[in-house]
Amino acid sequence: MGVLQNIWPLLLMFVIFYFLLIRPQQKRQKNVQQMQSALKKGDKVVTIGGMHGLVDAIDESQVVVRSTDGSKLTFDRNAIREVRSVD
Image 1 (cartoon, rainbow, N blue to C red):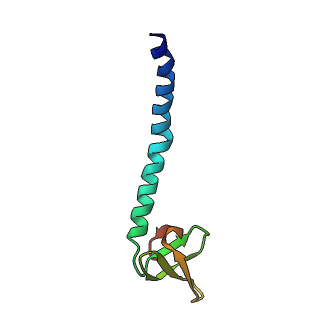
Image 2: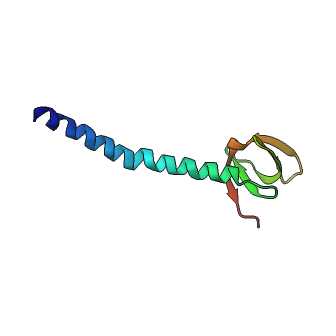
Image 3: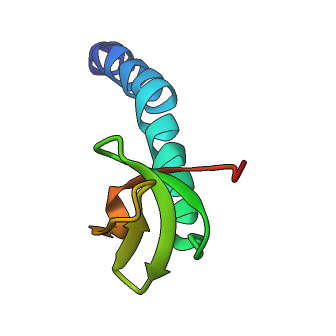
């Protein structure tokens, strides 16, 4: 009985951490992976570093992003933070 009373607070803390921290982070990571796998040529993207541009070419692991001045930079797919709507 005494051992069970000592374990309950730990179990309760784990459940709270799971629902407040772990589960939302897993959902965010899943959404990011879906977004990165759905990238296509012509998408307007923002990189983790804050560069805005259009996807010019794409392969399994890399994305070529064209900036507004016409320069093309190659990034890993993981470096794409978000896809913005094309104006």
